[in-house]
Structure formats: C-alpha cells, structure tokens
Image 1 (cartoon, helix red, strand yellow):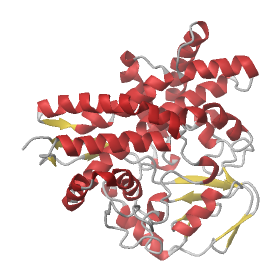
Image 2: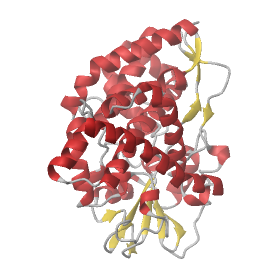
Image 3: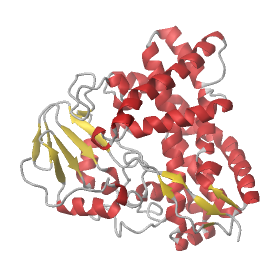
Length: 405
C-alpha cells in the first residue's frame, strides 16, 4: 500500500496507555487497512479482523520462515508456543490439552474458584483498602492454572517475574528497549528450565495434573518433543494467568467508572455471564494479534502475497459502530436476550479460538460477582490505577481499591 495514511497511528504511545480507544477510533474511521510498511498492514474494522481470524490461510509462518513481524528471530525465542504454530503442528498440540479446558471439565473447578475468591476477599475486606491486582486479580488465576499444571505455590513469585518479562516480549520489537529484547530469550530459557525440572519430577512421580498427562502422552505416543512440551507449558501458564488477571482488573475499573452498570449487575445477578462478555469486548486484555498470508489472500481490496502480514487490531474492531450500537458505552446487557450483539473478537476466532475461554470467563464472573455482592462500599480510591508498560497484552500494574465506606 503506497498511499499515505490519513491519520498518524499513535495509540501505543505511553500518554495513551490508560485509554487507547479514542486513538483506535481515529484510525478505524480513517481506513479499514492502515499501512505500516510495504509488507504489513493493520486491519482496524470488525469485518476485516474477523475475516482474517476465521481464515486458516492467515497463519503465523514461523515454521516456513515467512513471518515478517520478527525477521531473523528464532521462533523458539518468540512467546506463544502453539499460539504461533500453524496446522498440522497446532492441531496436534491443541489436541493434547483441549480436554482439560472443555466447559464440562472447567465447570468442575467452580467450587475451588468460589472458595479461593471468598478467601481472598475476606482478607481484602479486613484490610479495607488494597491493591486489588495483588489481592485478587493476580493470585486467583495464578493459583488455578498453577493447580492445573502442578506448580508449587512457593514458586509463584518466580513464575510471576518470568511471566511478566515474557508478556513484555510479546510487544512489537520496534516498541521494546534493547534491554527488553535481550531479556526475552533469557526469560524464556529460565522459564523453560524451571518447567524442565517439574517435568522430570512428574516422569518419576506422576500426579493428577496437566504436566503428568503430557508426560504420559509423550511416553505413550511420542506425539510431543521435549522442546514442544516446554513451550506448551510456558504458554499454558501465561495464557491462563496474565489475560485473566488483566480482564478482572480492567473490568473492575470499567465497572466502577460506570456506577449505573454496577447497580444493574447487583440487582440482576443473572446478567453476570453476559456482563463478562461485555467486559471482554470493552476492555480486551489482548489488544491485537497478527497473521501472515500463507497463500495469496484478498482483504479490503488489497492483495497480500504469501509472507505479507496483517496486524489484527481486536480492540478497535470490538468498538466498530458498524457492528455495535453506541460502542463506547459499557452495557452489560449487550450480549443478553433473544437478539444479542455479534460475538466480540477478544477470544479470537477460528482455529486459534481461546482454549481457556470458559475457564477465564468462569473465574472473572465469580470474582467480580462475589466482590460486588460482598463489598457494597467498593470504590476506586483517590490514587489512580497504574497501567503496565505493555501494549499487546494490556493491563494494570496496580489497582487501589476501597472495600468499605
């Protein structure tokens, strides 16, 4: 695309970290495809973003060496595991773990989630004022995915450190400091070394956890290499922890800034499942992803050659007024009723639809619903929330909350 953009895309600048959505709106209104460089464009509207996500011929291209987003970077140094794979490897890897995340199995975790949420809220209410990220939003999903993988609680501090470093590493390389780029492969190696130790333990002493299941599958069918098992373990931990904690934190900020929606939720608790989807639409933890044309593809009037790429700006598509009425308004009834709004893109679509979608929704629903019910004086303090310095996986660093009047 040789035409100059009509607007300058600056939504990732630090000044917009707390609210990039008006900047997304400017570029979405300007063009369906924003040119980034001769090989890469950014899809800004729902129709184009959905078309890319649902088309398996828009992939990642790392195995073929055609990914234009990180040329020359070793694929093993790129976070994501199966999230950066294309079929047939993606299909094989997903098949090994998908059973653990189907709704009927994750529903079995409901009592554990409810008990943990109430324990964490007990402590928070007693304190009166807390950083809710540390009090609830982080320990809840880390404990749940930690239980599933078999991570000892005493290791959570180290796990959180590695996870954050890898989250930073998911940002576009051009936005990262030289130190962050250097640290990304180091953090991956350290995290994988940690999981290598756990996996070695599970081979000697299997338990009722996902790592033991993966070891058994590897021994039984030889369907998983040691390298793949390490990458999959890291990917499951980050996917099950970071995005859920970000959704809980950002979702609560959005609700507390819209007290009419808090009152509506409290008076109509049956809306909780639909409210979680509206929080996902309104404040998606994953703001954008990217895809590579595995074959020649057409999109919004442009022909993409094999190896050319598209940034899928999910956060802009989710507020596309061509799809959602009054999209800048938080409305927890939007996905309820007989004629719900079209599905948001926050959990992706197609073959990469979020494996842990039901588990993430379950934890968020229970956490927010319980908090609203048990803390009637819940409010933001005078201290502003602090946003993390990442743009792809967007979330809070701190969230000061008052739980009692």
